[in-house]
Length: 298
Image (cartoon, rainbow, N blue to C red; front, side, top):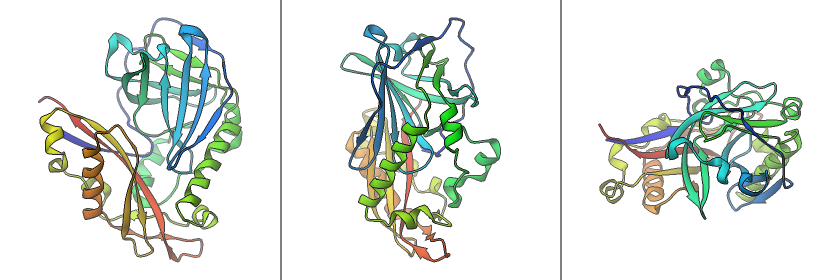
């Protein structure tokens, strides 16, 4: 059976696993935060621990806002039983609630890699915010704010790894502010008026809903027969009439056949009510989404 799963900005909500009995591994920083300006995204990274306990935390942001993607690299990122897909709980503490996640695991140069699926936030969306479906309505959730970010001083990963982790990040307000500024600089590089985009009264609204844009038959035949799975995060440039004028792959696990399949399908089927500026006038903007190509046995 083939699955194409759009991932909402808040990530996936799944059933938790039983709590781990062992005490978590607490790791202090062993490097400063490093901000990497990529062509189409921004990455904030920092190392924690030493020797075999060293792990790198990466926060990738593909558009401005409070959401980001979470990756861990290092021996402490090994999953229980070596599972390739795991579920777990993530928390920026001490004041914020946990959020549930699913993740893919792998290796890079003999180091374990944990890739948390979907976007995460320092403060998870409330049930009311999830029901509002911001990604499809063109609205934005209320910003988390610097006070809450400053109060978050550690990141805990539970129920997914061999040993639960607590990374002592320190206050997250300045690192996340730098990450957002990088993302707005990227929007400027895309050719937009940043102040106009910050002041939008409505972001582009998918018409029809984005879940209809990719169908099971869009799974590339060669990838299907070869048993390949993949993940693609894409960005659409949307003109003032609501028409997508280009598709850009921002992040992908490859093979490239998946990239081509996604952009081909969405450029054929996607449409929008256009973004509106602060005065309510239609203006060009952008819209992003993630898709998983997944094979599962019946």
